[in-house]
Image (tube, rainbow over all chains, first blue to last red; front, top):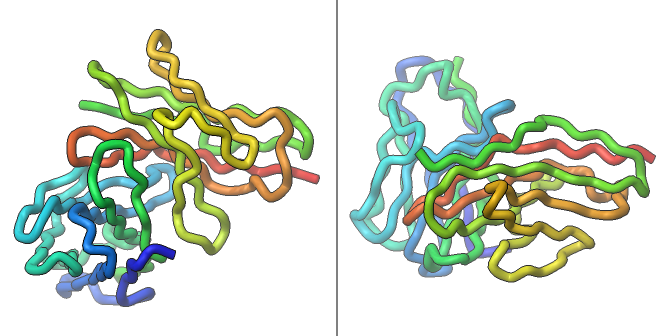
Length: 113
Length: 107
């Protein structure tokens, strides 16, 4: 597997609490992505990063923020978790964007109760 | 907005039957398209990309610009092909995915 790990792997949290998910890579890839996977919706892009401190919004960014202070870590924060954010979250990395393979983490299953 | 559409959420076939997983895209330029697969309890992984014109595990996909399609095909499905399949499109820095199609190959 590509050197990409997500933590935690599972989390249950209460509505209204902040939650941070971590994506860590050892590949020194420039591009990092956060997706959520929901039945019937497939994978939807939340935020992505194209370098340290360079991030941008994806398709479903409301209620989420990200930070990338160093190449290897990309953090996704749910500022105030809601039940609609119950999902499986995937991180992905790519060295470049042109026709290159994206490598995915194992996923984080988040339940907001 | 640039979109990738997979019209079928579920496709069920018998072993040995041909398989076609549909993918349509809306993009005005030269698209960069991929198929990703997620087997049960495994990470999402690249299956093939249109630029390579390759065949992986017996699957092929041809880009049809006239029909704006990138359908995934296999002439004879195997039980181990049962998985979730996603069509994906490169749009600038973003990699966006369709809704996915679950393929079930019955014995």
